[in-house]
Length: 137
Image (cartoon, rainbow, N blue to C red; front, top):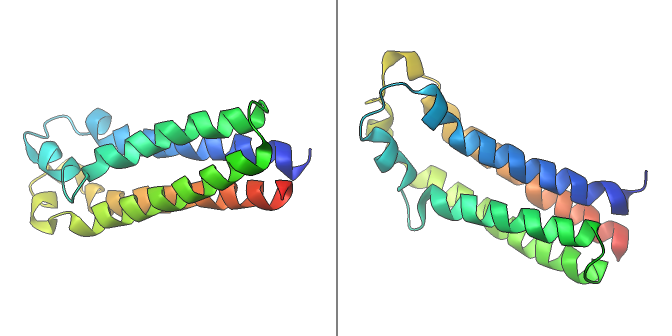
């Protein structure tokens, strides 16, 4: 399998993994109270902006995979949007109020490193977009 075919698939997988990681606290924390709302709305656009770009990038990667647009154009859009996604995720992670993280139940201590997991998974998106761009240019 060549890189031009596998990189968009990896990009879609990275976006879906990011959406899953973002949704995990809603599923795994039984009694979060209002802490999740504060957690996700931190920063200028919050985690919703990260999720929106991840969904948008799924469409972009799929259009490149299915050759609906020129591959070089799609790869460029994916790369720029992927870097933007990583920047939004990092801005959100840095804006989270640490005091809010300690308001979650004792069984959810993993929430302390969840935001950094989001940033780590978000970094996979521009990496796969970069691989796609290098394969088609």
